[in-house]
Amino acid sequence: MKITTILGSPKKKGNTATVLGQFEKIMEKDHQINRINLKDKNINGCLGCGACRKKPDEIGCVQKDDAISVFEQMLGSDLIIYASPLYCWDFTAQLKALIDRHFCMVKAFNLPDNHVSFLENKKVALLVTCGGPVENNADVIQTVFERVAFYIKAKIAGKFILPLCSDINVAKTKGLKLAEKMAAEL
Ligand SMILES: Cc1cc2nc3c(=O)[nH]c(=O)nc-3n(C[C@H](O)[C@H](O)[C@H](O)COP(=O)(O)O)c2cc1C
Image (tube, rainbow, N blue to C red; front, top):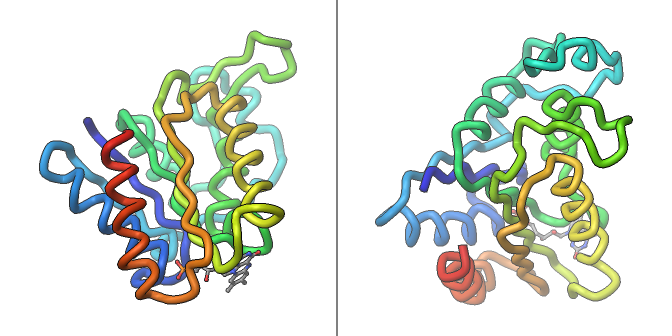
């Protein structure tokens, strides 16, 4: 499988990177891993200009930043991991910007049950680390992820949350168990 992992944390050696790295290490034995660190990318928010709507057969975004190359890597993958620390109950701004920009890979969403997504049937999974519990904290991000998956017509392969992740040691120890669970299920 070709797996693209998208790290939305501003920290390349933080908690989320640690768990994601453990997952990648297990998977790279049998699969091809392509890590994208959004911290290194220049990705603007969606302009809402609608230019992509007029180009049904291509991505068609007028912004020539790094989002297009990230999308091309996603389109060439079998499985995409969205990995983010929980920031104010949601994705980091870095990952949220990329997710908003998915708009240009979805066409004719105004036609009920008939929209087209370039990511249709792609497997997607969510990885979140957070300082607090899952309940009343890491619940909204899961709902957002489910809605995004519906919007892009992707198949949710799994959702993996590491709660009470107060420091890097928790990310290394409990994170390894979660990484192993991810590897077993994905
Ligand atoms: C700006 C900011 C917002 C945060 N918001 C939340 C939150 O809403 N809920 C929570 O449980 N943890 C929150 N945290 C804690 C992080 O999610 C947690 O420490 C995470 O494991 C950090 O991952 P990282 O090292 O990959 O950045 C927040 C941290 C920051 C810096």
